Image (cartoon, rainbow, N blue to C red; front, side, top):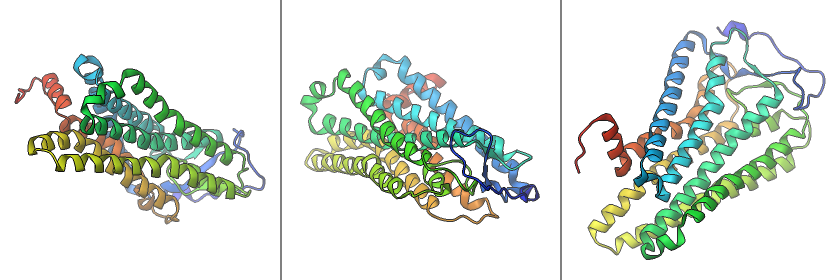
Length: 324
């Protein structure tokens, strides 16, 4: 299959993102070779699993009044919805590209749109996790004030902020990138992202880089620090409480911590992958960039098996006996 990628794509003029006549070539698929069907079915199974498992957990949360009236499960549902959108932004086209008989391409406008949604989903994942950390902090450290501080109006406001702030910041980064005309149309990636697109441009990207660092600080670093602070305070309270209280508190926090760790590792790999020049003759380095899908695969598993209330509903749905 590698022989089909021998054609070079040269450009003699600048191309804007509004152009639909010129296509960006995704060269990250070189080296697929005889393993194309292995990659295809692995990713197809992952996509089906993500969508079905997320839908099951979302159905259980929305159909059970004991769950969808609790802020914690509303935030979990929002995070799982994020996972479904993020997976659908990458995997359907990726699956088609793997089996493509020609070198995969994408229009500049579709590429910048895909890049926006990938970064938005990633950034909003961190803001949602910081909101969930605050919810757990108030629930455990200030239980008597929980229903006063975490009202449904507050929940809607936090959800709106967790989505709106990243949308504005990533939208700004996308706009800055789209203003720089493209002079290179060969991208050694499996999918589009803002950083790689910026490197394809001919103009000065200093402002875009500075804005990118600012966006990363606001959407990733600050929420991460807040998560660490919240769970640090929770741990301090647990250390001063009984073992029974500590066990219950840590049981409710463990799923969120595991999900946060997955997001943090996946984002770190994505940043490293973007700043590393992959071997143009091998798909393996580019496959590492798909580590961003690991949180979307693990989220329904973690929340389905580590959250007692959801696990109880899963067992009920499957007709299995509950321990209590």
